[in-house]
Length: 473
Ligand code: ARG
Image 1: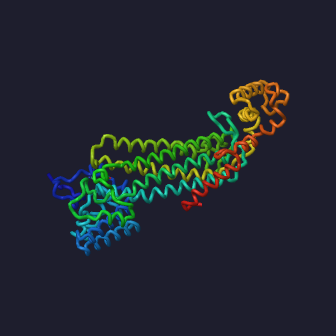
Image 2: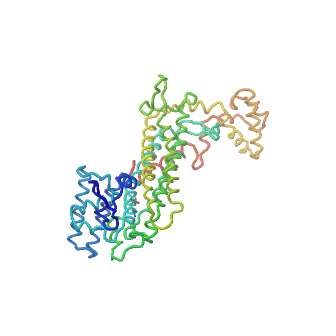
Image 3: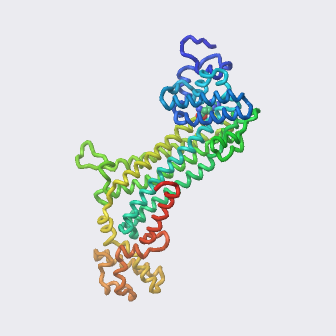
């Protein structure tokens, strides 16, 4: 029963009057609206509607003059939204009904023709795909900028020794450049994941209608071409029902965050008194409200912490889809909050991380000192013997005994005398000592992908070429 006792207009009535006698409670409107999540889709929604309206005209489904009027009014709405002279209606159910209401208020019956052969179900799928085609490359550019930053820092540190770790124990010496390039290659793969997802996203769902297409002779290909899509989605149910692209992207953002979070953990460790490998700039550090001396790596910690949020977004999307029967279900509206949060969190993390690194100072002396004097060259001792014909397992045992001997003497392997070395193997000669210096250990590892300067330079060149080929220098 429509009592309509209060003066609030039923915003819904303009679009689908007839079926409902009662208007919804304000609480119901508030609960179901997606208008604020949709806000960032507004211009994509209008772009989709313009293409749809133009096609309705050229396909002869509505008179050309009315199609032109629709396109003109949509352009006006767009301009007013951009100028801030038109505001979103918080009571609108979503961006689609907001725009359609606006059109009808301006054009009357012509406005009521926009939705011919279309449903909000294919419309939202279209809006998301249009938005992602813009936003994902924007995110990828941020990744490229970070890759470029890493390559730039690496270039200045191809000779900067750094202990390489496994299990967070000294393993073998590497260089800071090699280490930074490792992170850069992970980001290169992240970049590729987004390109892969984009190829699948770039199909137009318009024409799928609510779920089963339409009896009207829409020209799906023309709309797809006008909007720059590679083609049209092959199945109408699939087109309105799946959000696998949201999951793929959230997984992509999750991996970016996983990479950044691990890198942040290193930055946090490395900026401690104990490591002292890096000092973050004051700009990208925070103080303590009680301890005057503190300079905390809060930005790295926040990125590490926000990684959990992005994983949560991924899980929310997967759970939203789980068990949903075909085709569209309103559950799918929840995709936007998770997808946009994952996007925003990852995008700001990538940008902040790049700035934090650009202004960080690396302490080459501390890193080199940390390489020397330990046993990070023990593998080199074994490989020295291998080059003299000793089976590797035997050489490993000789080197292990030498390490034990040196630990007992509280010195490095290279601090032992040749006579002491020869007590362990007659094959040691005077040339061993030069080979045990950290720099020599690094330079001797010159296979493709190794830390030797020549190989690192190749990596840096390739990383830079990857960025340059995509327009980022
Ligand atoms: N706000 C909706 C969403 O994001 C748009 C589609 C609404 N469709 C419907 N049948 N209620 O999914």
